[in-house]
Length: 232
Image (cartoon, rainbow, N blue to C red; front, side):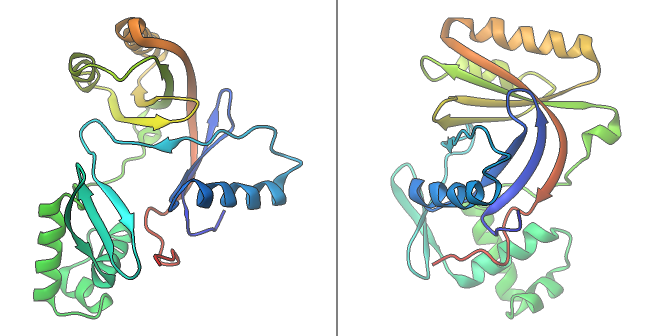
């Protein structure tokens, strides 16, 4: 899966075998990607489920694609426009966030002063949410899981606060499709897994319609902003 729109590929254990994170301009674009994938691997693929990512509870910025510039909006209001230089800076940061400012500016063909101004602007607007190290939780003796949930309605603020308060929950996102919510968490042992699983199920029981637990086995690809991605 060297397609530039495929951000990540992860092998999992459960009802599904792989999780593919895909960047698409719309449902038709996503469908075309999977048609091409099915054409190449039709003998091996028995089932696919496409989930359209909605907002993350603490992050609701949306990016709308236009020609040459990309409108960044939040809550229906235009925040500002991204141009080619902004995209280039983001791509280099996605590959190596520790790159010195002078090298980053050189890679993006701009001055360090311009690069610094653009990065501050992107951070202030919420496009750059944080800069952090990606950790291999397996090397720390931890197992990681994906909890897919089908809800009858969105979670209340109290329920969201409950999930955020769980020390081993590190990712929450709403989806449109067969599943409503994804919760990713890590555990130290089976006892920890059972405790976490039951805590989430019991807390969300009034709005929980169905659920599926997947074990994250191996990250096969991680390229959040490929240089080969076509933006127009």
